Image (cartoon, rainbow, N blue to C red; front, side, top):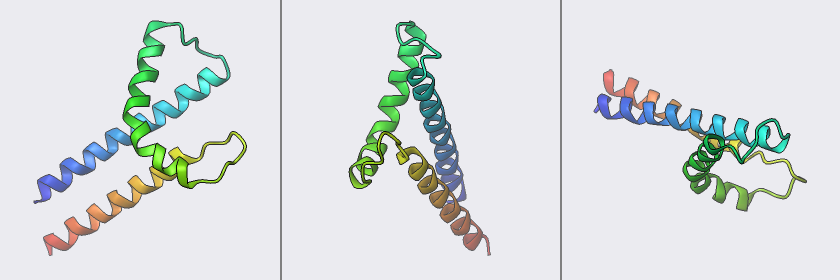
Length: 96
């Protein structure tokens, strides 16, 4: 059972980084540091969008309009941290 918890934790870690990369890429595009006409940039944006949007969309529906500031990735990262802490506590309670 601990191996399953380890695998879930590692997948959450990977998803954490996809969210971070997606947020940074969106900032770089918004500030015109990178160009979306570049094929690699467009593919990276599409990849991160497709992975993160299903989790971010429900959060965005609940949040009030903050005038262009999107804090949904922060809330999703906090949720992932909560799940990881929960998995850690479950793993420790099983070991006792």
